[in-house]
Image (cartoon, rainbow, N blue to C red; front, top):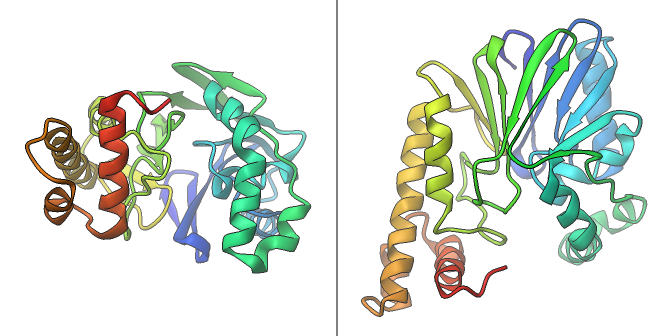
Length: 266
C-alpha cells in the first residue's frame, strides 16, 4: 500500500507487522527487517517485486527481534538506529532468541541461523538520512515501548513511522516498557504530526493523528493508575479493573509503572 509518495507499507500476517519501504532516486530505504532470515527473504522478494531499485539503508525502529533479526540479510546496507538499540541488541539479543524459540518452537530451527546485527549508524537525539535525493528524519523523544524507540519522518510524503510506540488492532506491548513516561514521549512527538499525515504503527493498520492522541490518552490513564497504586490510594486489582486495554497488558503495564515510580527499572 502506498501511503505517501514513494512510501510503501506491507502488512505481514506474522504478528500483523508493518514493514516500510521508502523509494528514492536509485536507492531504497527499508524500515525494520522482520524476525527470521526466511521472513527477511520474503521481504526482499516483495521489495524486488515493488521496484528494481537496490536497498541501501535500513532503519531499526527499536531493539525487538521482530524488527531486527532480519538485519543480517541486509549486510552491506547502512543500518541506522538509536544508540541504545545497538547496545540492547548486544546485551539481550541472545536471550531474546532463546525465549522466542521456546515460545514458538516451529521457529527454533530458523532462529539458529540468525546473526544478531545491531545498527552500525547510531544517534542519541536526531539524525537525517538522504536516500535517493529524499530526506528521512530520525528522532528520539524519550522512553516508551522500550528505551530506544525512534520516530521516522518522511517530510516530502507526509508520513510518520512510530514503530511500536503505537499499536493498532491489539493492546500495546508493555514487556520492556516505561509506562509512566510513554504518554509524555508521544506528547513530544504529536507536534510533528499534522492533520492529514499518515502514521504507520509497528503493527496493525495505518492511522492518523487522532488515533495517536487517543492512544496517548489511554497510556496517560494507565500512568495515573500506576501513580495511584504507588501512592497507596488504590490496590493493584482495582486499578487493573479500571485500566485501558485490560487483561495481561494492563497487569504488565501497571507492574512496570509502579516499578518505574519506585526507581527499580533500569
